[in-house]
Amino acid sequence: MLRRRVTLCDTTLRDGEQASGVAFSTEEKVLIAKLLDEAGVGEIEAGTPIMGGQEAEAVSRIAALGLNARVTAWCRALEGDIEAAHACGAKSVAVAMPVSQIQLSQKLRRDEKWAIQMFSHCICFARKRGLFVVAALEDASRARPRFLEEMAHAALESGAGRLRVSDTVGVLEPFKTLSLISRVVDSTSLPVEFHAHNDFGLASANAMAAARAGASNLSVTVLGLGERAGNAALEEVALGLEHLYGIKSGIRMERLRGLFDAVAKASKRGIPASK
Image 1 (cartoon, helix red, strand yellow):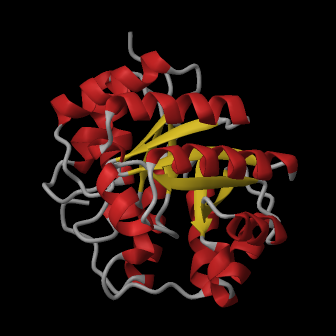
Image 2 (tube, rainbow, N blue to C red):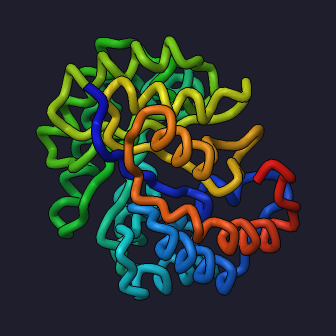
Image 3 (cartoon, rainbow, N blue to C red):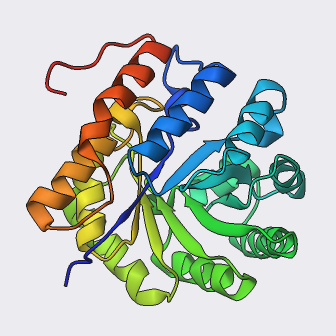
């Protein structure tokens, strides 16, 4: 049975800004956050406070706007990152930990046992500061299925409010996404979010498949802006959910044009004619 409503979590200000040549000013970020809120986006990933400077200032200003959307700050699974987010006034954090063997061994030089312990510790650390925690599993599409279950259990036991499954290197296609997210949803009582990348042009299709598999939240960006080939496009996912699956996302379609204009102008990119 498909869900009647799926929450879109927009990461234009964080992952979208990782697109080549894109750098939003603080004022542009504040404007985009306001327009996202007016468009009915349920959650805004505002940035990475540990970067400091203008990044931290932008997160602080967005967190202070009193938006209807939840404002989330992105953190690595490190105490310092979480402290920086807390200092910015964020009430919600995404605590990210790589879960594939290749990323753990080659990027962090660590093993799965360490990952579980550090992940649990940092989620507890954030919860003690009154923060809502999105337990973000990086490169989950290449992780061992059993280890994903173990990490999901650790997140639940540590007090996380949601689990994020990320296709960090964009290797999934819709059938594999459906299978992966179905397994994760069945293995945890936490709400499950899916974060797609568009390396094979399948990010929006994969997001739709994740919703069909039971994901309650989908990560998107305006115009699909993002690292490498981009992310799942907010407008494509919102329209697809409603018109193909009958699932509401809360997006006010009539407000999207102003949002497109602001993001296109700030990113120095034109709006595709199809939009």
